[in-house]
Each structure stands twice: as structure tokens, then as C-alpha cells.
Image (cartoon, rainbow, N blue to C red; front, side, top):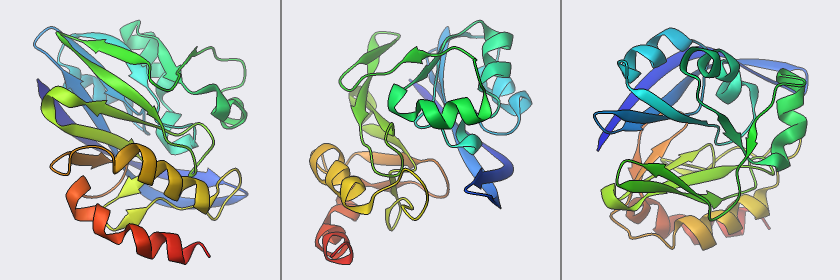
Length: 206
């Protein structure tokens, strides 16, 4: 299984604010097919990483604009469906009104060669946030739910700190501690590196 990180740059916009951001886009696949995780800013380097393979899905971990802004362009270029949890529909419609996507559900499995990405619904950063666990490789793609150093931001619309901590506690920290955490921004980490800080995060929310 091949896992590639593509870093693209642009802006994150919500609640009337705009911030410059670098996003991690993950292209996960075999020699013949690939899944794109998040669709940020610039389709060209993402398509270059695909290298002519069949893209079977464009999975959006959540619908903040910096994770979805080139999803329709990638779908048009590859013919692959866009997958998103419908709890983030209001965020999606703000960026791509009327553009269709297929609903993601918790515990859904997205086929990938002889393996599959296991969808984990991990709300908190937004209501529809999902993480994707690839058990065969001991990796999880967490979007903006869990970073190196702690939970994703919860200071803006549709986010909730106690919810993100509960998602991390029940869904992510339940994974084997050696599991590598590939994030939506910045460096990767491991479940084992983040788990000892859970009590600090819970205390921060009180």
C-alpha cells in the first residue's frame, strides 16, 4: 500500500475570517487505484500524485472550505465520487451549493485494493468530521480532529470541545498505540504519543 502526502496552500475561511493555511492531502492506494483524502486548494499536484491510477473515491474528512475547495474539480478530472458525512452539509453548501456528494456513515468501509478504509465518525471540530483507519498499515487519517499536540480547533461555528475530546477518547485512542496519525495539517504523530495527554484535554474543557 502506497501513502503519499501532498501539501497545498491557500486560505481557510469561516465566520467572516480568513487564514493562510498549508493542508495535507493524502493519496492512498495500490498500483492500480487510489483514494484521495481531502481536496485542498490545488488539483494539479494531487492529480500528479495519482499518476494515472483509477481514483475510486474523494473522501472529505469534513467540509471546511480548505478541505473541499477543489473536490468538484478532482471529481470531474477523475470521475470519482465525493464522499462526505451529511452532518457537514451546511458547510458544504456554503462552498459548493447544489454540488452532489455521497453520504459517509460511521463504520462504513471504503474498499482499497484488498483492504479498506474504515470510517470513524469523530465529530467535534465540525459535526460531520470523520477519520479513516487503514488497519493493514496501522495508520489513521484524522483530518482536523487530532494533531500532533492535541485536538483540533473548536472555537468557531459548529464546533464543540467536549465532543471532540469524546471522539478522540472513544474512537481514536481505542486504536493500537503504534498507529500512525496522519493529520490534516502539520506533522504526523502516533496514538501512543497523544494518549497520555487525554486527561489534560478533558481538564481544559471544564
